[in-house]
Image 1 (cartoon, rainbow, N blue to C red):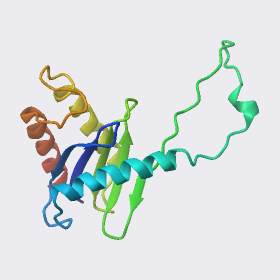
Image 2 (cartoon, rainbow, N blue to C red; image 1 turned 120 degrees about the horizontal axis):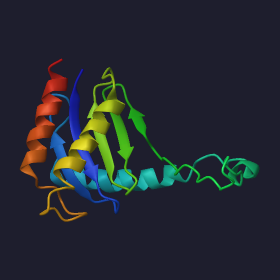
Image 3 (cartoon, one colour; image 1 turned 135 degrees about the vertical axis):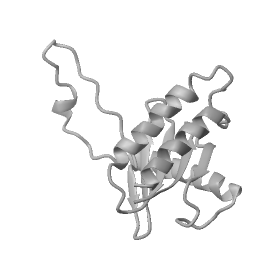
Image 4 (cartoon, rainbow, N blue to C red; image 1 turned 45 degrees about the horizontal axis):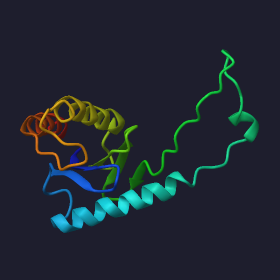
Length: 156
């Protein structure tokens, strides 16, 4: 069971972070290819989020127990892409930042793993007073904690 790589995409579709954890798992690609991958995934995710099935209009206007209208769930878009060689799991935050985790197809608890990666992002990147939103992530503490966590997973 292996975590191969992590890519973080900002809400505009720009690559703000990429890290490879297991060199033998995926083919090595250039930085330009990572930028193209981020932009392409952002576009595909936007299209797939609009392909949600139409819900019954009577359910949309239904009131909750308190008499207030309920807010519909936001469209999710592409969440998992699986091939015979890897699995791509996407976690989208409420602010539109996308976390793409490339793992082995047999990797268990990918949802928990990607959630923990997001928690570390919240703790070490978003609370960093020198980090500017939507800009590439350059935070040594985040790199160290993330590498330690993924190394622990890959050594199981």
